[in-house]
Image: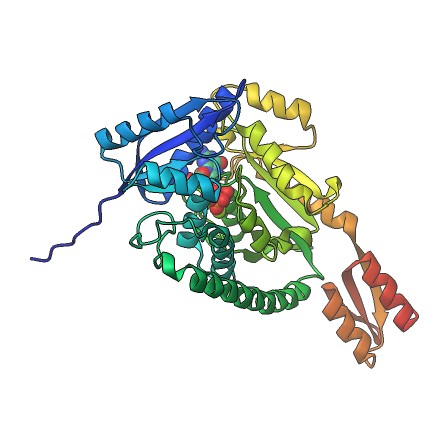
Length: 421
Ligand SMILES: Nc1nc2c(ncn2[C@@H]2O[C@H](COP(=O)(O)OP(=O)(O)OP(=O)(O)O)[C@@H](O)[C@H]2O)c(=O)[nH]1
Ligand SMILES: [Mg+2]
């Protein structure tokens, strides 16, 4: 009989510092950290929270709390301690010394780990590897005495011993250089693809992780993206052509979600993925309104999006998962503060007609239907109409062809000039 040896999940204790007046925020953050840990394949044993004005510069916690943590870890037979904030290289080293034998990782390392698990395309993989290398580089310090960890498990520790540090650093730098070059090449290819879509209306889904972006994508485009009750399920951008009706076709893109304290290395290296967001004609900001923390999620999305400098009028706010709301309180909040928003359930298909209507209106505002009587000899003009516009209809009217075409205003202007229409 065949025996399958299943690796035991790692046993984790979560740690956070609660700043004055931020108790509720810390509770939400640590609950989210727990979901991240589970997504990475760990089981959460307990939480340790210390109320402090600021994080201890050397040890994150004060010495008493660190001791409590040590005893708790022994008692519960923990393997890994996960901190809710990014540890400085010094904190990391000190804590590893204090809690010898335990794996010490922080929120950033955990998120990077999940990204590694969920990256499938060449682009996403290269982006995650770059972020990892950038994260690791400052941590390869001389004082680091803990590099002989075995590989495997959550967190991306591992690597050679202390004597190797200089070599490691050089290797990492070379790797970063190479990854940046690779990503540049990939980015050029993606730009070309993106350009080919530019004559159509591009809609991007953005939002906090687990908000239901992929579910909405699948509703419109048929099952094309994996949906799971997991954080950062989607990393690879998927773009699908969606025909809303005869006259309205869009390209819809689903991409990586956001989270609080997203490692800055990840935001930087996912820049080219997020170009989809920058170049979209319309962005649907998807929010899980059933999450008690949805207002904070909205602030975090706006914070990340601020970098892209996208005009406010290009967004439509979509409150999702209304089917699991227990009271009307959240909806009231949404209607009052976001009168132009839409309340939907992507999973149940509720409220989507109105949303589609709004998207169609946006398309109509940005493109125009034009009629051209074209001589069949005018091959170049006919080719350009096909290339830059969307032909709704073409038929012979006496000796000419009547084209009914959707064209964006600037393209119409340039064609008018070129062919003196
Ligand atoms: N009850 C309810 N659940 C929903 C709805 N929409 C999505 N979900 C669930 O929410 C979870 C996350 O959905 P996804 O579509 O994967 O979320 P996402 O925004 O793509 O998440 P990431 O890819 O991780 O960023 C899944 O378990 C979905 O089934 C909804 O309208 N109602
Ligand atoms: Mg998704």
